[in-house]
Amino acid sequence: MPALYRDPLVDNVGVWGIPTSTLDWCEENYAVTRYVAEFWNTITNYFMVVPPLLAALRCHQLGLDTRFLLSFLSFMGIGVGSTLFHATLQYKMQLLDELPMIYCTYIMLYCVLACDNEPRKKNVGLKLFLTVCNILVTVVYVVFVNPLIFQWVYGLSVAVLIISTVHSARKHNVSQGLSFSAFVCYGIGFILWNIDNAFCTHVRYFRGLIPWPFNALGQLHGWWHCFAAFGGYFQILYTIDLRVKCMKNKRKSEQNGSHQNGGTDIRPLGKKNISSRMFRDLWCWIPVRSRRKYDPEYGVNNNTIISNGSSKHMRT
Image (cartoon, rainbow, N blue to C red; front, side):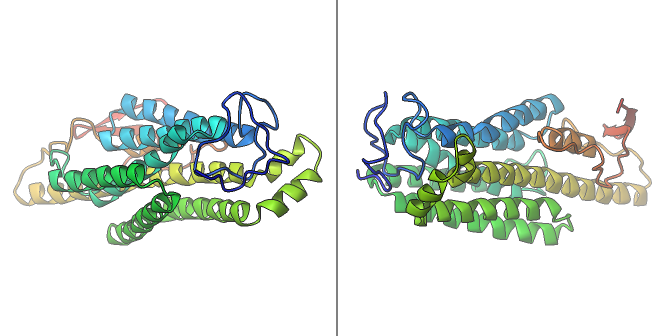
């Protein structure tokens, strides 16, 4: 399996041996240490591992829907797989990087498509369809070893996710700030990824003019990891925001129906109610900015969380 950018004049061979992956990125191999094939491409996966892990733990603590926990865990899985891939440049590790990207995209797509379903609804048909798609893609990609298969499938999946996200924001009147941020971050990362691929010789030349360690700023694939990490994180936060809005609208509809029928007791739509406070707590896990000022107007103020139809004051 030929590598894309392997240059024997500048690329070394380390403890993991000659790369067996179908892709070898623009970063010089084993240039920093003989134990890591692509050092900078490896460590930049921090943003795809640590923040999603912390967010997944917070999802569990707050009792959010399982779909959001799986979203963060699958997103973290991409970071772990990418770390192993760039550290070794072995084909088996490449699969651990690329296949989770498709799995995570389908989980995010499920979160968007099933945003307004009742908590007790299982959505068996949609889950089965997406699972079958994942299995088919996995089998085809493993049998026919061709990176173009992954790139086309992943590109189409992301396109469907973007279209579904835009449609859901308009349908449910949700602020598009998070989704827009996700698209911008991912778009910038995608542009840098393509520049790194198409102009690798030039990128390496200009990188060579910059003294170490500042030449690491020219590792465009590493920047792709950073921007993609924030883009994916924003997208998951958008699906949580979307779910909050849909559940709030359903609760309002039930309250209106109850008042018309002379009743006042409205049972919660799930075991634990999603609130803006929960959403804020997840947002705060982004390491570069606090989200304390964000408070979507879902009937929940800065000091109150709605649970089981009553208000409970919490410390800020």
